[in-house]
Length: 173
Image 1 (tube, rainbow, N blue to C red):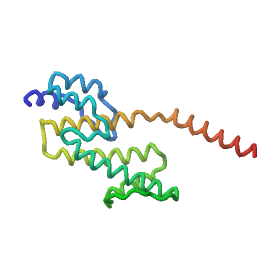
Image 2: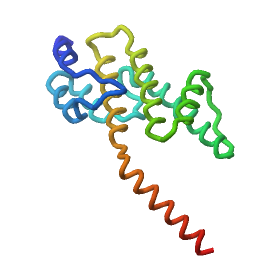
Image 3: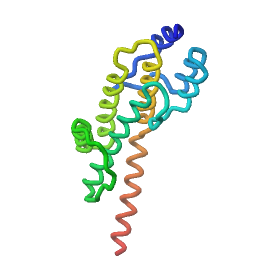
Image 4: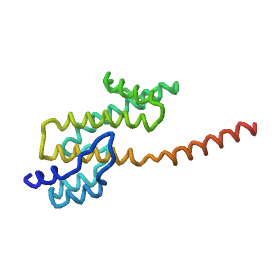
């Protein structure tokens, strides 16, 4: 625990509207000599869908609700039924609705990212130098890593390619 004081205070701040100041592999390198082997293994295996670890179980519950609401609203927007039942949360539904109303997919992701960061801050609460803070930081880093994987130029090129293919099929009819 004493090694957490230096480790956590030396990590750069993560912001939903900021750049990714450290990669996940660099984060793991920082953690390797400062956490137990079991904690390190949990961090190494961590994904946004993980359910094991301090704070991670609470995150998994929230993230699952968010993804179900997102899938539900997408299905409704497409005029399809959504067969799964789940506990609806009014605030999550409102955030997802705002995200789906964004002008483009990247803006929608940013709306969701901001909400996910706020939720993680709430889950960490008043913890300062323990596993809750460390795993909260790790999840935020995974979220930023996901956001940074979106490349606008590749996305536009893929869209144009798909659209051109559809146009060719329509013209050939």
